Each structure stands twice: as structure tokens, then as C-alpha cells.
Length: 171
Image (tube, rainbow, N blue to C red; front, top):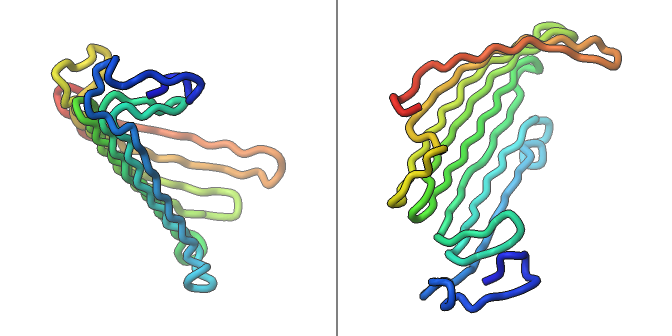
């Protein structure tokens, strides 16, 4: 394995990796709706990534297996409505399980004014024998509301409000 991005390598057996594959893969797909249905605005993206125990690259080293999957969705309806969704899931052996979903709805009131609202749910759990003291576990759902103004010149502004709608005791 390498902990410096491939400048130096260490035999995995010397650091406790008895059966580390240290392999990885990532697959991404992005589809613009207009490419399939002309004139339909929007996009769908999905990804899957797997890092095997012992894998190492800058910012992506891991001692245990990690699987990530997720995607985004964006579509516009009736020229003034838009919807955005995002989901991500991470599972690490003896580590973090995280599952996040987000949904946002927007409306263009006039050429200058817009409003949007959304919700985000986040669930985190540590599956290892020791939970880091500085890590939050449990579920939390937040709601947001944003009012925006575009001057049509070189500046824009917005007001943003967020509130926790529900949370588990740990959060």
C-alpha cells in the first residue's frame, strides 16, 4: 500500500493488512434529458465508488472497505418551477455509515424574484468498536426557505432561513 499517493510503497503484511486487496473502482453516469427528449430541460447523475481495504490515493486512503453510491436529479417544469434532489450513501466496514437525502423546490416569481424551499435528512452511525468522541450519530432533518433577488446587473442577494424539523436525541 502507499500512503503518499504512490511515491513510496509498504508491504501490506508489515502493517496488519493480511488480505488487503487495496483495489478501487468508480462508475459515473450523467444524462441530460434534452439529449434523450429534445426540449426537455434537466439532468440525472448517478455514481458508485468502492475502495478496498488498504487502498491509498491522495485524500482517499482507507484501512477498511468503503462503498459510496448516490446521485442528483434536476428538472424544470412550466418555465418557472424547478426541482432538485440529491442522495448519497456511504458504508465503511468498522467505520461510518452515512445516508443523506435532499429535496429542493424552486419557483421563479418574476424575472427578478425567486423563492425556494427544501428539506435535508442526514443519518450517521459508526459501526466500529470505538466511536470517535467528536463525531455525531443519529438522524437529523432540516428545512430551508430562501427568497432571492437578481438585480439584472452585477449583483444578486438572498435571505435564507433554516430550521431543524426533527432530530434524534444524539444529534
